[in-house]
Structure formats: structure tokens, C-alpha cells
Image (cartoon, rainbow, N blue to C red; front, side, top):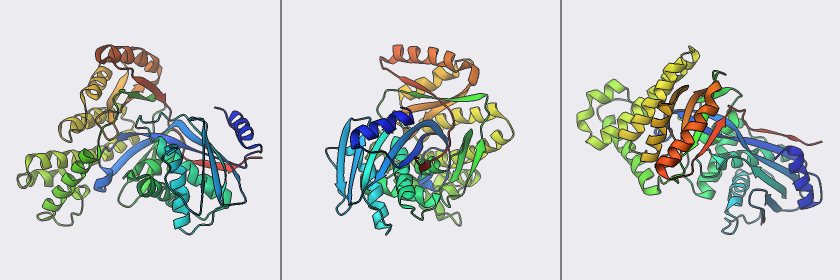
Length: 386
């Protein structure tokens, strides 16, 4: 939906013009999976699918929000913010408002319209885009003194503390800090980052397996606790270790006998995945696109065999991609047990890739996959509408 159409929708819904516009992108992670909660490195890229928000400030404590995607309106008071069971899509905005108030920042009510084209439930971080856009809209509307890092952390806190999803910082951070035609390297320990240019002759293609992501809380918590246990054991023999991020590959191999086989596999994935992120940046900066693509295949093998969070459908998508001309690399992306793969494809061969992989996968699995060609996008923006 174009901005002018969204403005018309706002006027139809509320009878007046919006004052503020904000937009934040979704993301796909190129490298660095399950490294974030190990204080490690990630390498996501913002995509040209986003959440848009229009706002007009109000004069009381009531927030009214209309979802153009769900065709529903919800309202709540800033004096008593509670989760909504009837309109769960509104909880991300409620959570952001709740965090702003907890931070002691002065906000008032207003009228909101929200519209997005980030596929929901596909692992492309529609929720983070929503939270970041909402936080940016509040910041612009009330001239709040929040820097970009604080904005990302506040959006993350909204999801963790209000919505109840224990996410890492990657999704919100890249939605804020991304730059066009670049991926973002992020150190999840100290939040240092840099934008790394991507080759314009390479396109990013996301394949949604049509398998709902089912990394349930139990499995996710198991992986986290296994990593934490490994780091604790290894810290007894390796100095200055507080997380698996601190372990070198050689140190892990030298001390593998003190870990049981499962803990070793989990540790091996995290340790080598961090190295893949660092090597991947070197490859891109040196113009070695085939070298970067090889790392994607290595990452998938590690997630499948060592961390054990893939599934047959994701494996099939990666295998099919590897057989198609013009594909540079492919892997599962996201938490696992369903969701999406990400493939790097020569730009001139994207349509041929889509035309082949979707029917072959759908025929083999009986599923209805979705394929998205994505362009690297800029991070959040907000402004005043004239």
C-alpha cells in the first residue's frame, strides 16, 4: 500500500489527517544462527518489506490503533496497559508504550494506523519491525530523547517483557541500524556493529517451507541450557570464559573430552558459526562471493547435524537450491524446525530460481511454499507529514 493510500485510510478511519509517519523493515539472517544468546556474532540484513505506522497525537491518555491487515481496531489507556486477548496484534504497540512509560518518558494518547507487508510467521521479524516502527513514531511525535541503540533495546524489551517472547537483540537492532545495500555485523555482547556492503550482482531469496516454526519453548530452552552448561564446564579449564563466544575452535578440540557428545555438538556449532560470521565479512570485503556462499552451506550442515534444529523440508530446500544454476549459497535461517531458507542467487537468475524451486519442492512435499526475492533495505525512518 502506497503512503497516499495509507493516509486516505487513516482519514477514513479517524476523520482527520495523520501527523507522523514511521517505517521499519523486517530482516533475514545471513549468518550467525543461535549465536546471539551465546554473546556471539550475527550477520543479518534488513529487507524491503516493512511495517508502516501513521499517527496523529491525541489530547488524552487513550491510544486507538487500527490494523489495516486485520481490519480491526483496538484501544487502550496509557494509565493501565494490559495485554489484549481479542486483538493480540495490538500487543506489540501496547508493549512499546508500556516500556516508554516505565522509562519515565512522557507520552500521550493518539490515533494509529498500522500496515505491513512483512509475512507474518515466516521468520522475517514482522514483530520487531512493528515494535521499532512504533517506538520511532512515539520518539518523533513526542520528541523523546532516545538514541538508536536505546530505541532497539526498548523495542526488544517490549517483546520480552510485555509480549512474552524471549528474543535476542538482533532483530530490533538491524531494523534500526541497517543501511541500503548492506548487511549488518553485530557483536551481541557489546552491541558494536558495522554495515558491510553487499555485491549488487547478488540477490537474496527467501523460501518459506510452509512448515510452521516449531522450536517450542522446551527445545529452545534445552539448546540455551546446553550452551550455558558447556560454557560453565569449559570455563573450569579455559581462563576468561563466560560464554561459548569466548572459546576458540582449537580450545574446544583440545578439551572436547570433558564434554558429553551432545554438549560437544552444540558447542561446536556455536564456536564454528561465530568463526563463519567473521570469515564471511572478510570474504565480502575481499569480493569473494563464492567463498561467502560456501559458508552458508557449511552453516546449514552445522545447524542440521550439530545443533539439530533443521527439518527434512528445510534440508530439501537447501539441496534443491544447490542444484540450481546461479545459486551461490543456501541455508536454513531462523530458530529452526520449520520456517525459511535464505539463498544467495545471481541477480539475473532469480526468476529462473523461483520458477524451478517452488514447483519441485511443492510437488515433493505436498506443501505450498512461498518465495520472496528481497533487496537489502535501510533501517527505521520517521518523519512529519506536511
